[in-house]
Length: 103
Image (cartoon, rainbow, N blue to C red; front, side, top):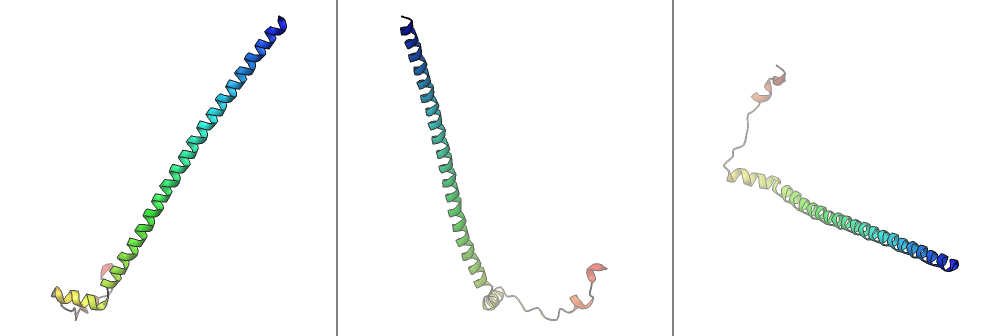
């Protein structure tokens, strides 16, 4: 009878150890899934931001080329003539007295 009682206690201990190991395994699995999800979400965000930077870079190149196209001398002359601007000449009086700002 004494041997039978020890066997029951051993079975209970083995059962509790198995339950504990299964619980720890489930916790580790939950932790793994959560960390994998967090890493995937961060990678997705990085990819979205990288694509946005690429599209903004393309847009910046387009805008810079448009700006350079507008700054050609022919375009500036055309703009000046459409706005009835006149050529500035004889403005030496501005530069005759040097260091005006220091006085």
